[in-house]
Image (cartoon, rainbow, N blue to C red):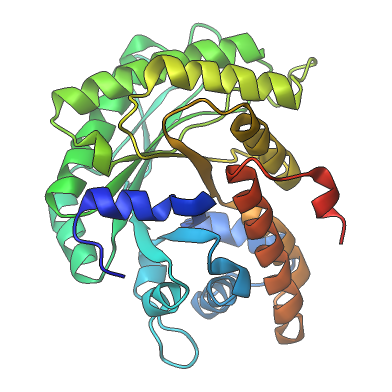
Length: 338
């Protein structure tokens, strides 16, 4: 793969309906996933699980990039091949999560800002030397009584912009992830408003910090009802409201938007993406950067047992293929029947 600059890397990741496998769960989060199948979260088990995912045949042609956790980018497969090279062997690019998690914002109850700018340049230089081609930083926006506040949104979007500039200065594509959480009983209208405010602020700060939009990928939430809302918006409404919000805020020169799944069931996340691509009429690639919505069926099938590896890989391959079809607006529910 001859990719000479960040614009080419960003375009490659989302070309031809490809999307991103988010495999950057922290060790505690990975531990919770493993608890659900009764597997100990040891370094070796985490390595085996991720190697299994990365060697799935459905990676090739469907997954343009894989977001890794710090532990994983340093690991080698059981046969000694670095996991980075396993990913490259699937015609996919290795990327790395670089933020350091959430910190409460003083004077803003229930709100956080993502930290990790201290020492970021040095970390990025090391990751670039290890072959990482792109990076990810997640901001978290909660909806609740009187929140999100302007302070919370602006502090998070300023941090995202500073991170993005630093990543580009080190030759890597930044994925900027302003996630408005599904947690809560808010309506789809409240989600729209919080997402709209977040995206407006984000692109103001990216421009102010001199970030090259053509070498950036946006990883937003979809505009949905809150998880506990009594009235859940249907697939078509989610698709329409999400597109309206993006068209109002996202510059045309951005190469790709790769949605997070945010806790949506796997098939529902695929259906939403497909519905948007069937509507069409937007200037960017509209694709996926899913964690649970790609991994959940594979994790369940694996159960930590070597004899289940092939079945688990088939599950990941199926979800990767379904989401590629959705990115092209060619998915149908009947394809889920196997």
